[in-house]
Amino acid sequence: MTVQQLFAVAVKMTADGARADLMGMASVLHRRGIDVLEAELTRPTCGLRMFTALFFSSPQQASTVLRTLESLVDVLDASLLEVSDARSNRELTVC
Image 1: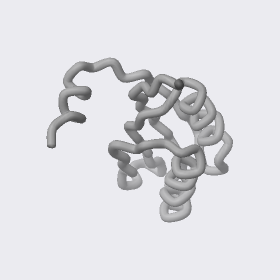
Image 2 (image 1 turned 135 degrees about the vertical axis):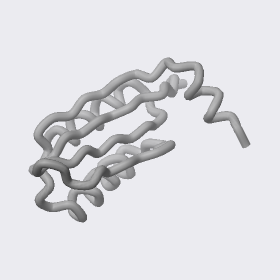
Image 3 (image 1 turned 30 degrees about the vertical axis):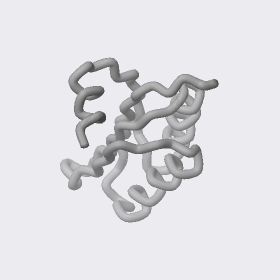
Image 4 (image 1 turned 180 degrees about the vertical axis):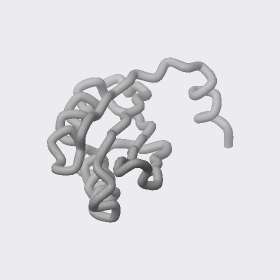
């Protein structure tokens, strides 16, 4: 049994291919079988965009997602954080 943890990923990318970037990010998460709780793509600012996502996965899956996102063409930087905020866990259980 693999333990699922809550992770957040942040990806800084160029603002050039906005629609393709969003689809690329969604595709990576979908192909890896990730349960996404929320995702956001910011409007272009100073030639850059940010994609962020909060998701449940195993640590190994999260690491693979990060490496895959880093390899995308328009990605300049990507980071992964394990989320241990109790407030986030409470929000997940609200019906």
